[in-house]
Amino acid sequence: MATTTRPVSGAAVVQEAGPGGDALPWTRNDGLVAVGAAVVDLIGFTLTSQVERGYAPPVGFVLLAVSALPLLARRRAPVPTLAAVLLAGLALNLSVPVSQHFNATVVVALYTVLRSRGPAVAVPAVLVSVTLPLVGQTSWPRPPLVDVLGNGSAGLLVVVAATVMNHWQRDIEANRRLLADRAVADERRRIARELHDIVAHHITTMQLMAGGARAHLARDPEVAREALITLEGSGRMALREMRQLLDVLRAGEEPEEVPAAPQPGVGDLERIVAESCRVGLPTTLELRGAERPLPPSVGLTVFRIVQEALTNARKYAGEARASVRLTYRPDGVEVAVTDDGAGTGPGTGSGYGLVGMRERVVLHGGTLRAGPLDEGGFRVSARLPLAPGEEGPR
Image 1 (cartoon, rainbow, N blue to C red):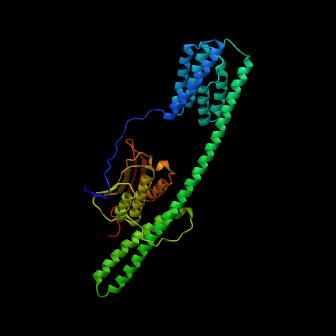
Image 2 (image 1 turned 60 degrees about the horizontal axis):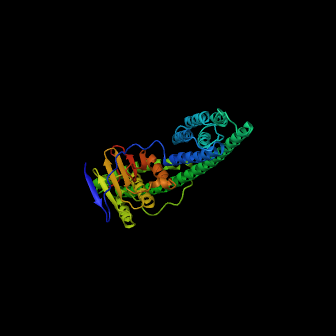
Image 3 (image 1 turned 45 degrees about the horizontal axis):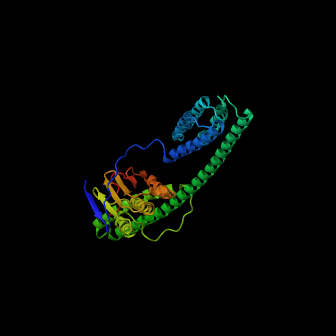
């Protein structure tokens, strides 16, 4: 397979990143929450023990620290985490009875269950979390009713906080879906305008070829034959593009003004890569495989993917380098844009650029992959299939 590398001013080649090691089963935020809850509980245990006994039993410190460890798995297994926290608290009550019942570790574990589970699990979780910490108390420094009311009030506050956050998150998700749907509709209108321009170009070519064939039919049949062959190919391609145009307009968007400028394609990749280098993102363009003309809509899709990916890299990658690789295969074409920046790529922003790219790729029956690399950076890759013998005008 032939490989052509075209360096542009200030560009550098970026190697592909391979698979990395396994990540930790918990996030940094989970660790911070666990440590914070343990610190709060230890401070409260120390103060109450000093008031009630004059000293803090070491076994209490150990059990409180152990009870905070399950919080590391609270996102992946919220119910088992709450059960482990409550059992550790029960062991503390049986070993060192104290008046500190509904502690910070229980609050975090119960809050996580209420945020991630329905009423069938949430109601029993609240009841158990309120009553189980009262078991095993052998000395009551104050009336039992005070502890029952205190635990009940604390549980109610956790329920209210989780309910408010769930409603707020649902509103956020609804707004995000509306914005995403609007972005998809805008992108479909844009694709429709571009395909309309391509179809109009083919129809114009067909008209010119038909006129040329008619003019040469009598005195130069061979020229007329070549014109008719070109006319047939343009008509077949125009029909295919028109079908795609109708698929894009299936939602019933109103047509907009057709842009007068010709639509870009694969031949414009060098220009956009050079522009990327001029604005501060060193970029290389690499072509692999035997180059051949692509259908205009496929070439336009490749161009838009590269354009959007490089724009995202300039916005979010920071000080980085990028590479654009276009691979011609017998059954299609593949394009990949990779950067080695410290940012997280399009995921840092609204993500609507990826929505537009995915709409274009799906239109051609292809696949799109986008995500951060294990070794740093971000990659956007797409594969667009082509039917046997399908290619654009030369």
